[in-house]
Length: 390
Image (cartoon, rainbow, N blue to C red; front, side, top):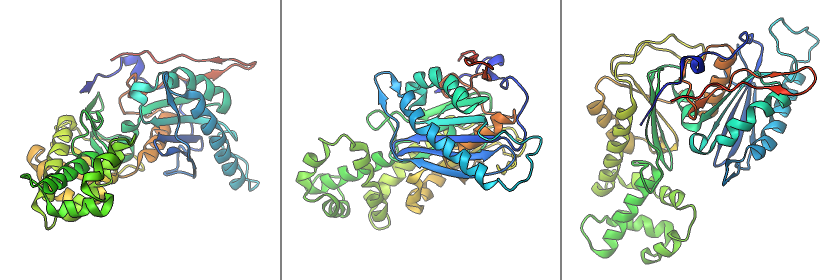
């Protein structure tokens, strides 16, 4: 799926001068395990400090709950700002480009479901964050975009994010291209739930005496879940079925060295992952200038494919066939491990936005960047939303 670029006015930088290297920036990663928040400065690589809110942000009929996100984010951000102020309170006068204590030049939030369930966030957060933290620039991104920024930075290329599910995202810095990430019933082919389900299918085939069965995987099913004929009763009532299926994926990897059925499952998974990467990778990626914290090697005709997420911790049983499939579908592509995680990506986006150097494509749902917010001297917030297009 191709996400077209925003209009020229939407793609331009936020209004106002770029923030100096001492200005504060905040990156946020909101996912199923909770909210992670990182504080940094424009001119320094990496975070100054991080904190975790263990409660996941609620999602309701209206989408992601903006109020619940703010209830967790604002105290966490203020705590990080206070800690930073205390650590720098050495009596040295602030430099010309130092932000006032508590002021945030830019903030970027990457959230699972942002593209389809983020309407309330896009409507409510710009004004609320400008009022509460003095945020001058804001970016609201799908978690796949922050995963991309963490893995690759602002270079053209492709990222495959693999965990329970699987999604591929690529860009030539003009538009976004997405493949898969449609959930375990419609896609996520090659992801952890897909591998786990295929492994359990092979185990049940061995239990029944059907072709394609794997006695080795049947043994592992019994060790993990108990008697095979009791598995449906354990699995089907669960609301977290994808995670339960994915929990069996490491068992498939562990059997792959000696069991041809398990090895075949991982090779098929590698084929699906490589197909998704090939669908989104810009095959003639142009060279890009290096970022200070980014590496920035020039790319060849094959582009760059970065792998990120827990799926690839399976190691060589999955990575070896995946490299072969990528070499076949994307000759000359450079396959790399992710440079950083989605929280790193959110902080990178915030830092680039504050410096007026955000080169990743704006998009109304994938990477939404409202124009700069200004708080009036006597209350009220003037907010001008970036025009939506694409």
